[in-house]
Image 1 (cartoon, helix red, strand yellow):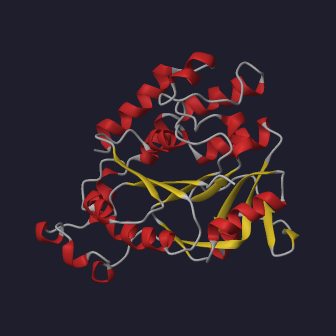
Image 2: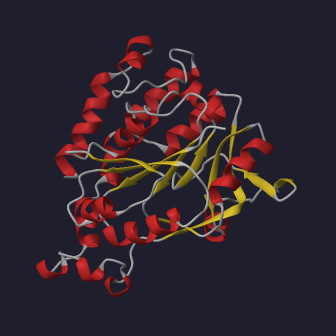
Image 3: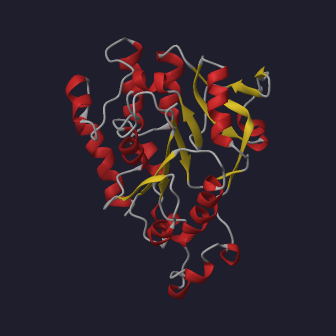
Length: 291
């Protein structure tokens, strides 16, 4: 079986990245890891360069942050046809041992699953109401849920053949994907009942793994302050909301297919509809506000 490709996007918050990347790698599971940095302005890239692990097949720093979808699609463009794709955000602490094996085993046990997310009791109790009954086969199971957070997700390769890429034209990532999967493909989305993650926004500097190497403290700031200053994603979703509405309308009436092309894959653009003007506008938003 082809090893799964794990995409790990870093952008500032080096304290979280150091902690959470260590947890990601602290497993005996095998995979191909792509660490992609969106032009962090703290010590993130310096830390990433120092990490040694044979499962890391790519470390790349983009000269500009063009948004998370741009970075994710770079990794997707490297995916082999029969390869599972796992996306892990850098504010996610993975708590479950052998989590990759459990992701794949659950997907194999439930062929209807296109996207499987990791979660925890807090997310389930606050965001999933009412909580559906868990579907189980042996030790593996999932909750069928329409809207899945994009924090730690496993995508089936057969699904990705239908989806192509994340939607660069809307830039809405997880919300957009859940609509496309549940409404426009034969697959469903769900949360794993056995893979637990912790979502952390910040940690105290005194417990940071690279506290002694941090260059920001000398400058009177922290990696989290830099992140807060440059995080304009809520503004992006407000400004570009109209694109999502048009996209949903066009797909609902059959004007365009579920497949989304990517700037990283010229052949996909040649063979499928691609609103380049929208995509470039989205990239430019982040170039202007997140670098």
